[in-house]
Image (cartoon, rainbow, N blue to C red; front, side, top):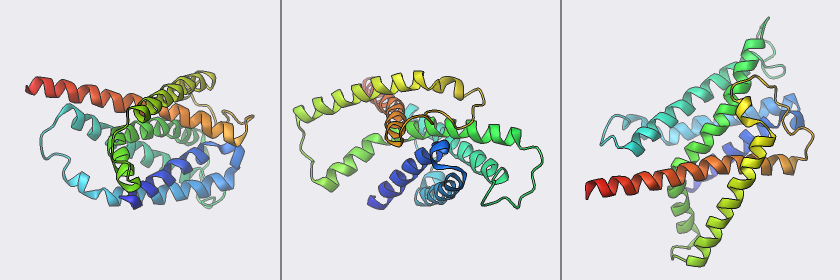
Length: 222
């Protein structure tokens, strides 16, 4: 579990670095992209049993959502990686591509969509992640003060994430081709904070939506 958490954390951080194209430059962008691909392959290998059990068991709302998001994330990452290799200017420059405009559009927009879907994917597993961290750190007891502080932090993260999302016009970037240039005039630290807070919107939203669905299903059973 620790290895899985480290692998997924590394992949998340590298995804953020890959989006910061105008901060890193093309060569680092491509090297980081290859690293993300390798970590993504490891992630899927470690969770290979999930694919075998996709059609097994009870298909609850939570499970259907998880299957849909996971498969969508898989398709998005595959499209992003294939287009990345084809438009490469350094590592895979030996691949001859004459008109790569459409491929660049696919690469950039699947990257933005992958960023959002990745956050939702994390949100689906947030409860499991928190429980694993608690066991590793020994914080198994409940604390009302800690809970209140963490929820307050979540509210602040979501509020700032909404601000960053509007300022950076994230909504339009999901549907209109815009080269990786957002926040290129900001510091690296500001870039990471802005994007982590945007991820926080979807992680928190997904996590609490699942809690609501779980309570609704429990009431229906009773």
